[in-house]
Amino acid sequence: NRLLRVTSLADALTRRVREDGQVYALIKAGQRVKLARTFRMAGLPWIYDLDKPDKKNPRDKMPKGHKKDVLRLERLAKVQEQAKSLQTSVFEFRQDRINSRPARGLENMVQQTLKGYLDRDK
Image (cartoon, rainbow, N blue to C red):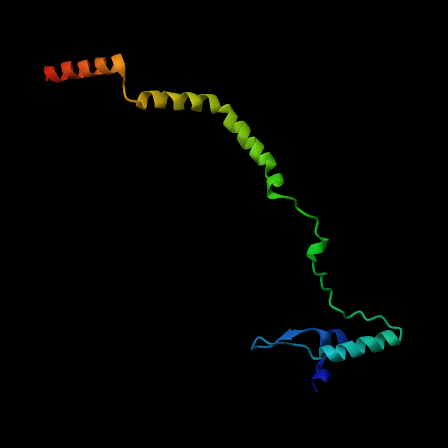
């Protein structure tokens, strides 16, 4: 019998893996329950239960809070960093707008005149 090859009860209760990948134990789950009940009725402690970690129930977790609250410090740091470079970026933006707009009035007339003089010299 396969139980005769086992030296201890703990060894018979441990699960093993066959070559084909199936998990088995020499003493099945139903027999294990009967043995545990017999031990308890005799006043002996049943020490062969697996030390399984308790499953984590989502109800037991502390709420993390909103993502907005968690990232608040990062957002504040980013805003302070952007506030430092705000004056220079506003100045550069205004200069780009002024330089990119087409010339009007007297400025336009001077540009056209200079262009004409430069083209005539070629």
